[in-house]
Length: 415
Ligand SMILES: *Cc1c(COP(=O)(O)O)cnc(C)c1O
Image (cartoon, rainbow, N blue to C red; front, side):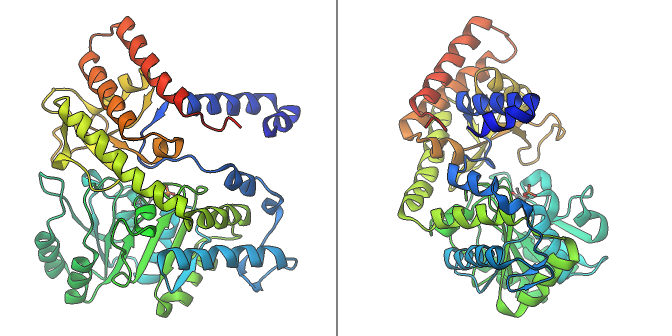
């Protein structure tokens, strides 16, 4: 329907969107940061709200005609606060990275010392990578993980005592253990630092009580809305009331102009969905499925960093097989599984090659995959690892058919 409307104006874009729909329907999506949002969320994002300028906050705008978007943004704020038990929520950040940037803008000055997890150890670009604004304008001290893929809190404490950061960031893009927010708070208190918990990846697990909440420990909590939370692409900042006015000012006029009210409407719809019992069941299944996949892979003789997972993702460690993350992610694509190469702790390979592949369960769980399906996914991956380097077309086709069978068992966006 929407495609027909686009086709009338632009055949090229309509065709590419149609191809992308087909790709999503016919491949097993294991990229840990992706998900399939509901049609209601997509409809909100594709609505007339895209036409509206609304600089400022609800009921305090710089433009007229905001009576409807005011209420929509207020709904999104209230739902975010309820879902995460937060004192204040700003739902305007265009993305997770921008949410973090706004916290930096409010909490620290250029040149100040900030501590965050190293990118190649599972941290995010916006936590101090030298190629990101966070690494360019601040003095970054990075912490990593040990060989088991766990944060060494004693090491974090030693680094904090030595470097006296103004801001400490916890939260990651590739970390499969539970994060101890209280320990981070204690360390921050010892050195007088503010604490930012970036729950972009684990948001759904936090919202449903499966992962401990960063509140009341963190001063600021940032998240994306499009990963486990299953909303539209975007960010949210939550914080204690004492920081509310400063954070709002950092977002606008500090960093952004007009908020994307159509996306904020999508966030409101997604947050309503996330407050439901169905979503609780979903989040629980996400973790069960990740564990089932990890167990399947390990029983096929493959290594997982940290020997399993406590959340929605894991890193396949290919050093024993003498394979690279790049090669395995590529053969997985040939057999109908999408995933991304990723470094393992102390990776001997470069970030462009890597020795690992990151695998996550949020998207396939949305489709309806259960533990037995994850077991089959693990077997397909193990076969693909063996195949890599042989270019055996027949076997690749066979595996591709097995992936497709799973996809057909759980149709996506069909009705
Ligand atoms: C994905 C992610 C972000 C950034 O999200 P974008 O919307 O891609 O900017 C920030 N922090 C963490 C920990 C993430 O995993």
